[in-house]
Length: 259
Ligand SMILES: Nc1ncnc2c1ncn2[C@@H]1O[C@H](COP(=O)(O)OP(=O)(O)OP(=O)(O)O)[C@@H](O)[C@H]1O
Figure 1 (tube, rainbow, N blue to C red):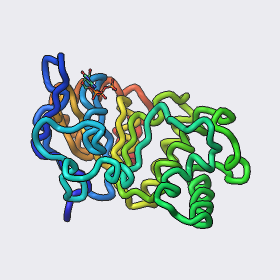
Figure 2: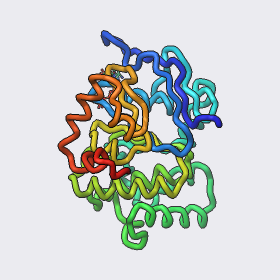
Figure 3: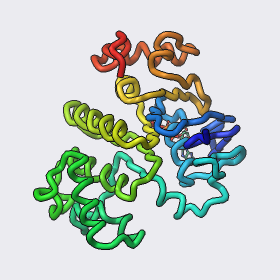
């Protein structure tokens, strides 16, 4: 089976750094996985995601999406097929919620009825009543509601691959927990591949079908949450796990309740 995403010996350097942001990374992400990319600040998590949708280009090696080398694909076309959610949601402030969600379907020239139906379906999916929220302005939403709209917008054109970079980082613990649960539900119902960056150990172990731990640009371990917990591959992984062990969510997974 062709991997949804594959890195083959990928290295990325930025000017002025003493070591590469990503250093000879090779890995494959299977279709339908929810891979959480976990590590401390500056470890290379965001760089990894941005190499997938060509916000960065690799210095050497290859990044493949569904078997296609991304360097051979027009970046705009590539990004239309990949959902992207970031912490600063970036909703268009002058467009109502419904129009924000409809952005990509309109670019793709879907007809009005199909677009409108999809907007309502997505608002429902992310837990927002379409009748109540469709015509609101982004400024009339809470942070958590804005993040839900950002998620709906990224899902609108039915991308097979979703990239999420610390999407819930700015939310309070209760809202964050709710959105994690919504995300799990959406992922399980969709069959899509999700790559989710977080620095939060509990979040990674709650959400991930696999967890990819990177530090200083190098993969430390890439495995299921259970196997990482049972057999941490490096001192860095061991230290990271003990830093997250105080959290309830992590403990329940680590205690064998499963994800
Ligand atoms: N555009 C850039 N120019 C120069 N250096 C960069 C650039 N982008 C990232 N870096 C550097 O590359 C390294 C990896 O950065 P990256 O953003 O991937 O880390 P991260 O793991 O996502 O960190 P955080 O959790 O703090 O967002 C860091 O040392 C960062 O300073």
